Amino acid sequence: MSIAVAASADAGQASSPNYKWLVLANTTVGTLLATIDSSIMLIALPQIFRGIGLNPLQASNTFYLLWMILGYIIVSSVLVVSFGRLGDMFGRVKMYNFGYVVYTFFSLVLTVDPLSAQAGAMWLVVGRVFQGVGAAFITGNSGAILTDVFPANQRGLALGIGNIAGISGSFIGLVVGGVLAAIHWRLVFLVSVPLGFIGTVWSFLLLKKVAPLQATSIDWAGNATFGAGLIALMIGITYGIEPAGGHAMGWTSPTVLGLLIGGTVLLAAFLLVEARVKNPMFRLPLFKIRAFTSGTLSTFLSSIGRGGLMFMLIVWLQGIWLPLHGYSFEETPFWAGILMLPMTLGFLLAGPISGFLSDKFGARYFTTGGMLAAACSFLLLIFLPVDFNYSVFAVILLINGMAMGAFAAPNRAAIMNSLPPDDRGAGGGMNSTFQNAAQVFSIGIFFSLILNGLSGSLSGTLTQGLIQHGVPAVQAGQIGQLPPVTILFAAFLGYNPVQSLVGAGILHRLPGNNAQILTGHEFFPNLISAPFHAGLAEAFGFAALACLVAAAASLTRGGRYVHGDNPDD
Image 1: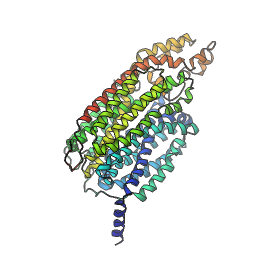
Image 2: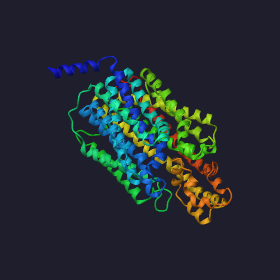
Image 3: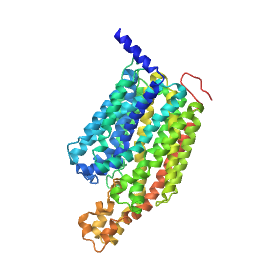
Image 4: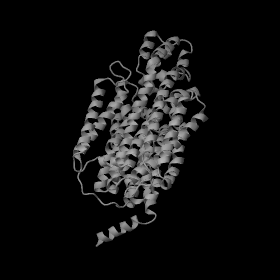
C-alpha cells in the first residue's frame, strides 16, 4: 500500500505544470557545471602548475599538460553513449543522480591534492578523469530526461536552453578559471563542490522516474571495442601534435600511427559487433531516421569548426595581441578570458530564442543559417590583421557565438524529437559522443595547421633574433631548434616565452638592455606574428569549410519531424 501511495505521489508531482521547468533548471545547472569543467583548466593551468611546483614546458612533463587539458573531454566522450544507454535500462534519473555524486566527490578530491611536482600532477590527472566519468553520467542522461517531461511543442526551447548552457559553459569556464586561479589554484576545483552538492541533493529530492525501464542487456563487446577504439584515436591525435623522431609533430611516429590505425580497426570491429548483437550500444538503425542522421552529422562538423577555436584565440590573445597592448605575460590568461566574452554573450542571446522559434517553424532554416553565418565569421577572422582593432574582433566573436547558438538549440531539439522514446538516452548519448569527439579531433587539426605554419620559418627567425640581441650563437641555435609546440604552449600558458626558453642565466649576462628587449612586450609577438597568422588562415579556412558542409547537411534534414508524427514539410 505504501509503495503504491509513493508511486502515485511521484506520478502526481511529475505531471504538475511546474515540474518540467524545475527539471529544466536542475539539468541546466548540471550540464553547465559539467561543461564549465571542460575548459576551466585552460586559463588556470599556469597557477595550477606553479601551485604544485612543476614546470609544464619541460619535455618530461608534457604528458601532464596534455592530460589535464584533454583527459576530462576524452573520458566523457567515450562514456557518454554507454551511460545514456544505462539510463534507458536502469533509469535516466537514477544514472543522472549518480553522475552528480561522482562529479561532486572527485571535485573535492581534486581540491585537496596533498602532493606536489609530478605526483601532484598525476593526482590531478586521475581526479580529472573520474570527474569526467561523473560528467558523462550527467550529460548522457540530461537531454533524455528533458525530452521525457516536455511536450514536442516545447522541447526546442527546453533542449535549446540545456544545449546552450552546455556549449556556453565551455566559454564561461575560461573566465571562471582565470578569476579563481588568480586568487588560489585550488578554488578552480573547490567551486564545483558546493554547487555540485546542492545540485545532487536537489536532483535526489526533485527528479522522478517518468519513462519506463527497458528489459535489455549491456553490450559488453560493443562497449569494449568502442571505448578502446575511441581512446586510441584520441590519444593518437593528442600525441600527434607533439614532436617525435626529430620532426616538429609526431604524426609519422610509429606510436601515433599504431594508435590511429589500431583505433580505426577497433571502431570498424565495433560496427560489425553492433550489426550482430541483440541489444547494441549504438542503435545503428537510428541512422535511418533522416532528421537524426543529418542532425548528428551537423553536430560533428560544427564541433570540428568550433572545437579548436578557443585554443587558437587564446594563443592569439596571450602570445601576440595582449603583450603588444602592454599586458604582462603573467596577466594575459585572465584577460584572454575576459576579451572572449562576446562569443559567450552571442551563445546566450541566440540559443534560447532560436530554440523557441524552432518549436514553431522547425529547425532546418535556423541550423542552416547558423552554420552559414559561422562560416562567414571564420572567413572574417582570416582577414583580420594580427594586431586587430578590438571592437571589430568583438563583433566577429559575437557573430560567431550567435551563429553557433542559432544552430545548436534547434539542432539538438530536432535530433531528440526524431528519436523513439526507448532510444532517447542512447541516441542523445550518440550525438554527444560525436560532439565531444569532434572537439578533440578539432584541437589536433587546428594545432597541426598552426604548428605547420610555425615550423617553416620560426626556427631561423628566432635564432637570428636572439643572436642580434647578444645571445651566443650556440645557445641561440639550440633554442631555435626547439619544437614549435614548446613555444606555442609557452604562449598558451601565459609564460614569458623568451624568458622561459632562454633562461635567467643567459639573460643576466647579455650586454646593454638586450635582456629587457627580449623579454619585453614586442620581441616575441613580432617574431611569431607572420608565421602564426599563416597557420591561423589555414585553420580558420578549414573551420569555415566544415561549417559550410554542416549547413548543407542541415538543409537535407527535411521538414519539421517528431517521432510518431508524419513529417511536416
